Image (cartoon, rainbow, N blue to C red; front, side, top):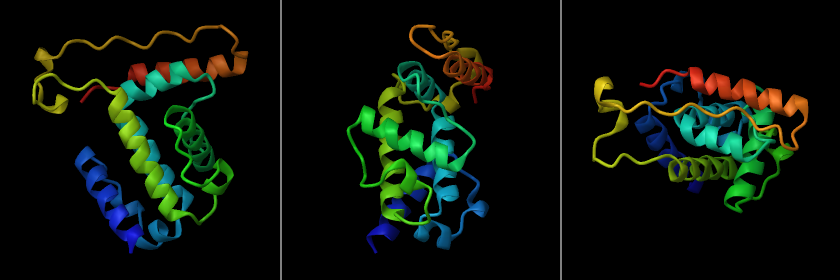
Length: 171
């Protein structure tokens, strides 16, 4: 019963943020901990908070949001452990199993809290989506990845993700 109430809260939060792909989610997938379903939620959160995601990509050279469901889960488990110290009782490898639904719901809640804490909050009470485009101040673009101790592959992956985030249209 706890899983159902926690998912109900997550459902409300995701809907309020604009998640509309509910036809790709079934109750069975949610309750069994289907990794594709929870990766869908995690990807939505990363894309919903591009500024915070870009800040995390710049901060952690290993952090890249990938297309593979298992890799999104592994990266999120590692990110939450590094940023908040939360482990939720599962490893990245366990995320790819159809189990641990409660832990995956808790991960989604934790990721949302983390991304909200990093994202700049509007000073007025107006939600950013409702501010007229002419009134918005332009957001700075992500800086290119520093070539400190990164491998060329990691640097190119970070650079590719940075270019993708910079190309996103603000709504």
